Length: 467
Image (cartoon, rainbow, N blue to C red; front, side, top):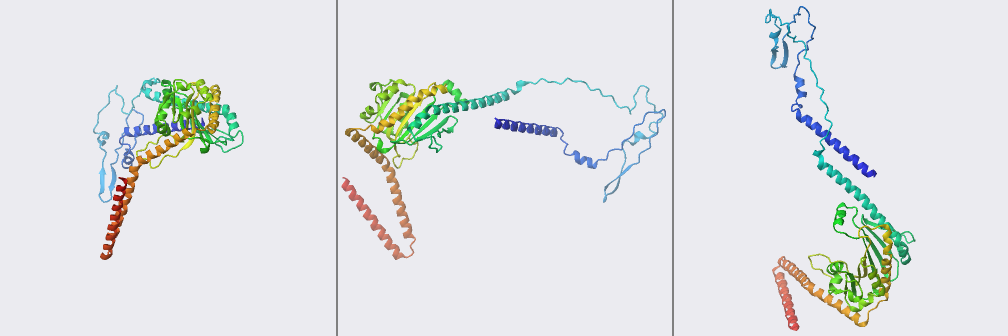
């Protein structure tokens, strides 16, 4: 709040300075000759002030002022200047003239009456409706930002307090603060609506990353879009397994909307699981779909406990993704990849938090069984082993993917090799042309021709063998 008050004072100070500068500029523009008044005062000589004496019976004769003589320039000599109103002071000009009885004397100053005009204190607020709307929008956005940020933080703290005992019982390190002792874990704030938690120190896995993805309650635009299209807070869990503790297969069960998106975005599902099957035959709700590389893997993953959890929380389970070829989403790049992406055996889970956007700290405890399901899956993948036929089929699939990748990248690799050979020939020709000795240049050319002829012969022999 102190930062907000300071920013408000700065804005008011800037506005006051801007108003005063505008007022000064307006006054300067009204007086177009304000810049020349200073210079005119230096050269003007005002007339001598005359004392106004009260009227008497006989008016006093004012002495004739002597003509003023000013020195304009020493080189030009003396220039006489006379008063142009001198004839008004000549006695002979107005001899015998008497002012009328009712006329006022010229020495009397006119009486000025100042009218009392009432001050118009009312303001026409209709002229400022745009400014008022902008200020109201800024105030509403700021209030929504503070309230949304505070609410997301409270929900993240409530989730950690509800699941921390379970995590500490299964991992030796909970949190990303480097403290291994109990009670030292803490959430890492990525943004105003995203928090992460890293857990490590468990058998058969390298670590587990938990991401709390709340709705953008701090964003007024996000709140308005949430009113039109409802969303949910989510928890994403990604467990990196040890390579020797997980068998080779790719499997995913997800609701139909998320399954269609994952099939397009995820590299391993797009490559090894092109076919999607209905989940009714496996005892799952009808709004789910199953993608499996090997039928044996489907039976191994969907045991009774996993099936019961999905049937009990069909609205909370978004997807369960098990893969030994996990490399994340596809990389959108115009250039063809030179090598296969690096893969890691991974278990990926996504769960919706209850409430459909109106989540409360009391609802966070309902997701405890889902986190227990994650730990059950980690232990089951260590015990799950495919049969001989399933393992051979998985290996064939991986060899097929490698061959397809080599065929796709063969053209690009051939173009790079050809460009490299052309560059080498060009450098060799330049070296021959730079040789000054004609005899030595001739020998180099003969040597280069023999090398090219030998290469062409080898290429023809390879073509004959291929036929």
